[in-house]
Image (cartoon, rainbow, N blue to C red; front, side):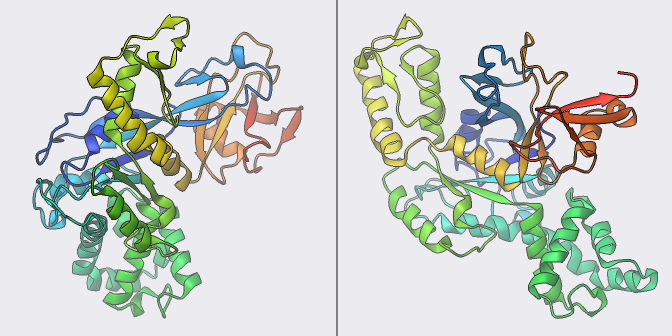
Length: 424
């Protein structure tokens, strides 16, 4: 697998979560406009696009990815995705499928919150008119906050007593309590560093002096690090979406709130993407996810030498609406941009492990692994396989440049790596 992290699609019923997952993965999630369409988590593989080094090293024709694919130097790297059960207000208290939803979140590294920008579904996912989508953004964060803070608040006096008695470092005490949320000590440390650096809590990391208000401040900072969230404003081609989008962008412009910042809001139309893909498979149009337009038989273009099918009037009209209301207005369907933002907010970088730095071999750049920013060469070897770590003898990159074990991997500098083991 090319990545070890999980992107979770979340949101209220009927916001378009399942359609979004279908638009970006190989999965087929059940779709319908009624509560709890998704009962079990639907797993799928999404694809993160990036520029492949096969172009720079002039081996495009020999680039044969083991996972995903590469087309003319544009590489698509697999990432794991999950569409979890529908969320409704009160989930932290067990309402709806709340307990299951929150339990599924433990497996996620980043959240994509699919929000119905049209305002045509209420907070329970039922059809309505004039609903404010900002409410959805606020209560998702509110439910996760209530889940984590509520569990800590009830046990806080006992936690502090044990912390004082054992004289454990504050980060260790908090990690012991937060480990059940799928967190690492590093995430807790980063949250604590933020609290200390910004003086959000007067007593800083002295847990014994924290009030419950201080604890709540820390939980909010922790959630920013543990559950970074991308908002996919879906159904952007619906009548009332324009004014709702403007209102949401205004609210989050230059101000991070509800766990969201403006740069993490992406405009999408999952159904438009699904329809365009279906038209491609049926040979009606030429189109690639992320494009700002498509071509059809009306444009007199063939599909790799195969004549595109004639469009009937109904299909032509629907494609025209997608072109006018989505592609020309917003530049794309947005679904690929959501994946890109989700990977980038985690700070992952692509690394290409190779057996030889002579790229004239029959197959080049077979593998691409996404690793966290700050990963060292030796840590990368360990991630690839325990055998490479145990027998590690050295590593080099393009130009025969030797790499130190503690060299941090950087894109364009040393992210093409040949690892040598003892006896090889």
